[in-house]
Amino acid sequence: MRSLLVVPENTGNAYQMAVFDDNGKRQEVGKVFSGTTSKLRKTLDAMLSGSEAPVAEIRYLYATKDSILFQPVFVRLRTDKSSGDCVLSQLEYTCRAELIEP
Image (tube, rainbow, N blue to C red; front, side, top):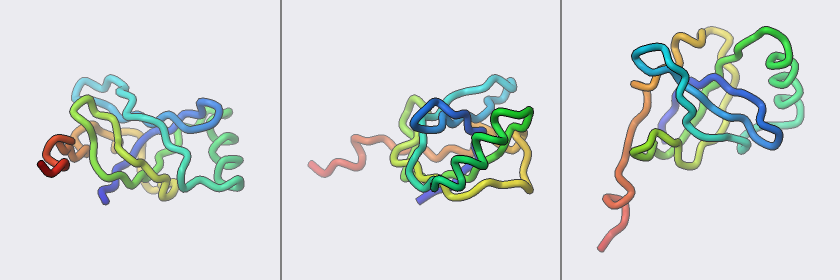
């Protein structure tokens, strides 16, 4: 399992995750719901409804070639990090074809 920092955004039943590329452009990397609790979702939603941009630590198996996280799990909020720490270069990629045995 790998971990990375993302900026979450509530999309109803899950949280859209995003990181920033080298040019500072926001890039979505998938959605996460697993690992969240009712208490955490209330906290996240309150932060997101205000002007806060929380940073979350996400655990995942790998990123696909189009930078989407495979099996993401919410680990925790990171108050010690800023959105500037949520960069695309954190992703660790794996080719799915390499994972399938012939």
